[in-house]
Image (cartoon, rainbow, N blue to C red; front, side):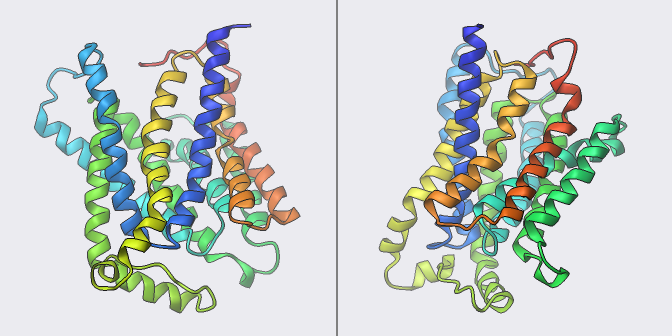
Length: 330
């Protein structure tokens, strides 16, 4: 047994678990604060949490700065990535107001299927497994979100699906930008811009979001406080205290710790192992929702989860069965 590969697999499994339970933290955080407030705070923490790793790699001389990439270009690159990231996490967080953590985890994972499809427009080849995975994923979405008639579709799942579209776009954008800027610099910078945009949205948009959410689902009592309510209303310290653990988990664990584990693990993990293990993120989200939030998992939902997982793996067929190991750029 290759001990380094085994250790890498364990670290990747831990990464998938942290990211999966992160959906539980996102849903729990919005029992106290609004979606943009939550994202603003957690991405500030996420960006800051990567600074020690950046300083460490800089001290070791491992930060990559391609020639011709000055501070201005780096700022533009991180702003572009942060903008798409902000839209993706905004829709994801809005979707969690109406759906479960498990559903959100698996539907977000649809970006794995969408990414190679969108790559067609960038001149990338898309093979039969991608289209087969797309068909299976659509069937999975049906079982997850629409087990009955069309009127029974879960609006939260549709909103989360929109986030998956932007996650796919974000993957392609980052894939292009990491050739021009160090991945850690790009990550920390995009988190900073995402936090900035989310903070602005928390001030400007969040009160309207609460009214809209109540209008869309009056039976789903919106008890969270918008940023304006937190500033003006009583009980703010207690509310922030209640939201502290979900926010800290979402910012430090899901971003700082899990990202670091992924970077370390993928140096030694075979690509096929990384693909399979990281696809388990949705399963951990469903498990966390069931254990910590008492979310119901229906038999048809489980069938949909299974379809989605198969679709993700089929889409990555070329990686899983590559004849030669892929070289990790780091």
